[in-house]
Length: 517
Ligand code: NAP
Image (cartoon, helix red, strand yellow):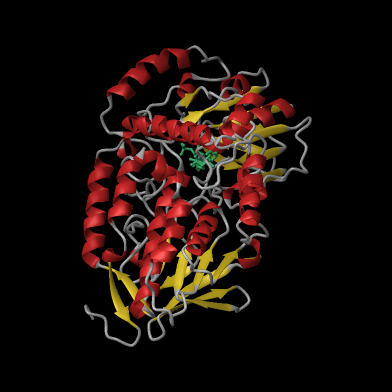
C-alpha cells in the first residue's frame, strides 16, 4: 500500500507541501530557469508550480516540447519501457494503444501534458543557451542565450538529458561521400530508400528499431556492426478495447503500473557483476541465437562476447528477420574509411552505397556540453568534471549553489523507467527550492562531505555492477568511469532522495559570508 501511494501521488505531495511551507509571507518564491522542455524539464515545472513556485521560465532550443521524443522520430521509434510506466505517475494515460507505444503517441502524450499543465506560456522556444553563471553577490544565476539575451533567476535547473547530442564517429573520408548521410536522431523523412543500397553504421537501441523498416524499403541493406547486442523478444501487443476501458479505472491502471515497475525492478539482478540469473539466461539464449547464424549474419554478429547487461539489453521481434533477408548483409570487419562512393573495411573490401545512416548514438558522458556553467569563484563545471561527471544523486555539485541537474550523472537506468527517477529528482528539488524560499534570498550549496560520501558510495556500488565489465558502452567514460548509470535498484535511489534534501546543503543568506569561506 505504501508503494501504491508513493508511486501515485507525487503531485498531491507537492501540493500538500505548498500549504505546509511556513514561508515568510513577504518573500516572493525564488525565480527558476529550467533548461530544456523535455520530459524532466516539464516534470520540474509541474512539481515546482504545484508547490507554489510559479515564476518559472523554460528555455528550449527546439520549437516544441518533448525532448528526445521530439528528436527521435525515425521509423520504428518506440520506448522499450512499457508505456503505462513510461508516463508520469500523476498523469496516467489509460488510452495507450499498445504495451510499448510508438514515438508519435509518446510525443502526443508529452504535448498533451504541456497543454494540460499550461506549460507552453512559460516556454521560450528556439532559444539556445550558451552559458550559465552564478552571481554570488546577488545569489542569482545569469543564463546567457545565443544572441545575447540574459535570463536571471535564483534557481537554475538543467534538464538537458543524456541523449541530446548525436554522435557521428570521425571516420576518415566521411566528408567526401557523395551520397546521402544522416543520423538516426535527425531522420530525413523526405528521403526514399527505394532502389537504394543503404549502409547502416551502429546497431544500438535506435538501429534495432529503424533497421527493419529500412531493410524492407531498400534494395539492399548492409549493417556495419562493431559488437553484438543481447537481443530479447519484445512482449508487445495492442491493448484490447475492454483493457483500455479497464485502465480508465484508476486503481486498475495504478496496479498495472506498479506491477510493471516491480517486474522491471527485479531485473536489476541482471545488472550485478555476478548473477545466477545472467548465467541462466546466457545458457538459454546462446543456443537460440546460434540458430539464426547464416552466411549473411555471422556468429560474431549474433552472439555477444561480453556479459548480458553490460550494454543495454535490447528487445525486438523483427531485428533478426530483417538481417536474414537475402538482401541484407551484416559486416563485423572494422571500417577503414569512407570513400566518395561507399565504405572500405579493414580487409580492403570496398562496397558502394547510395545512403549511409548513422545509428551511432549520442555524446553521453560530457554532461551539459557545450554550455559553460560557472559557479562560485569562477569554478567551471566542465573543469570540475574533467575526470568524469559526478553529482550528488546526479543533481548537485559543491560550488554550484541553487543549481540542480535532472537526469544528470549516474541517474540513467538499464532496467527500469527513467520517469520514476525523474519524479524522485523533482521531489528532492522541490523540497530544496521550498527550503530556499522559506529561508529567504541566499544560496544553498551542497556540503562537500555529502559529495565525497556520495561519490564513494556510487563507486562502491558501480564496482558491483556488470557495466564495468569488458564492454564499451555509453554508460562510462573512455577511462572506464561509470558516469551515466545509477548503480543500484530504483528503490535505493528513492530512499536516498527521500532521506536527503535541504539538509544536504549549507544555506548562506544573501550578503553574509559563507560558513566555510
Ligand atoms: P547506442 O546504443 O550508443 O549505439 C551506438 C551504436 O553505434 C553501437 O552499436 C556502437 O557500437 C556503434 N558505434 C559507435 N561508434 C562507432 C564507430 N566509430 N564505428 C562503428 N560503430 C560505432 O546509441 P542508440 O542506439 O542511439 O541508443 C542510445 C540510447 O538511447 C539507448 O541505449 C537508450 O538508452 C536510448 N534509446 C532508447 C530507446 C528506447 O526504446 N527506450 C530507443 C532508442 C534509444 P559498439 O556497441 O560496438 O560501441
